[in-house]
Amino acid sequence: MVCQNNLVCLVPPVQPSLDPGFASPSSDGGPAGDAPAGDKYQWLEEGAHEVIAGVYRIPLPLPFDGLRAVNAYAIEAADGLVMIDSGWLLEATHKQLERSLAKIGAGFGDISRFLVTHIHRDHYTQAIGLRRIYGMKVALGAEEKHSLDLVLRKDPQAVSPQAGRLVRAGAEPLMKQMAQAGMQPPPREAGYEEPDEWIASGQIYDLGTRRLEAIATPGHTRGHVVFADTAAGLLFAGDHVLPHITPSISLEAAPQELPLRDFISSLLLVRRMPDLALLPAHGPVSPSVHARVDELLGHHDARLSAMLAVLADGPRTAYQVAGAVRWTSRSKLLAELDLMNQMLAVGETLSHLDLLVARGLAAANSDGEVQHFRPAEQAAGR
Image (cartoon, rainbow, N blue to C red):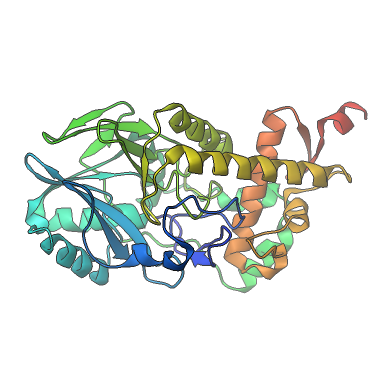
């Protein structure tokens, strides 16, 4: 992962949680999972939980409270095990994965390859750590190369785009608070190396026991991929579609110009596919990808409408709009969030405003480096 800090991600009625996968601090329409409310943490239990014959969900720990775990999936293949995602490169994760594999009579040496949905450290870095010891292959979406090059510091002149986004958002007060708090860009992280293979969208992996199709779903990250086993009715969704939280689209080392547009397009892409069971990276297995996608699309429609309504009162910076809307299922003000989540909220707001401009519903003008947004009809009437 590019950023070391923990991120709040809330969806009613789920309680506050921390997601290393860049989850949004906004709230949406609620979980579509099939677990009763009293069992909402049951998915965290250690083990190799059979989804269908030959496919096992393995929760792995995260190093902080809140969401607390990421799902990796072990698939029995003709040449051993294929893993979808790997967990974070931590001793506790290593040991729990080892114990969980033992429950299905396997070990690290039985893993032939990792197919990784995206670059974030809770999905990618454990695969790299295990590859150093056991030599299995690691594959990652081709478009993640842009961010990985920055993480590996291949370009010594490259800088994080986040500071520029905060300037464009007019978030100077937040930037001052962050500087006073000593918030620094993260150092180069252990666990990041080049993959053995860059995954192309549409690529088919014939495991002998089943076939997986890799499908590019940019948005959460520009190189995010999901894996569809349409014959078995399964979608290994990574962080693209999650049952309890809304993945963030505001923070990435090498972001696309309109990540929210990409995310929505990717949601519509999987919505057009046959409905499959949702095998997410965070949360329980759920019966319908389509049901959750509909909720996520509705969430972003509501956020776009709320932010456009704020602009009706006059030109606003993204920072001012972020301060006018509410955050989390508890309807918090921007100032009530911690500094990292304030930064995420401003980035989320900027992504929504940029999409409103791209759709012709808003207009932006610059005052130096700072942008102000207004409804398109107000801009036309000036």
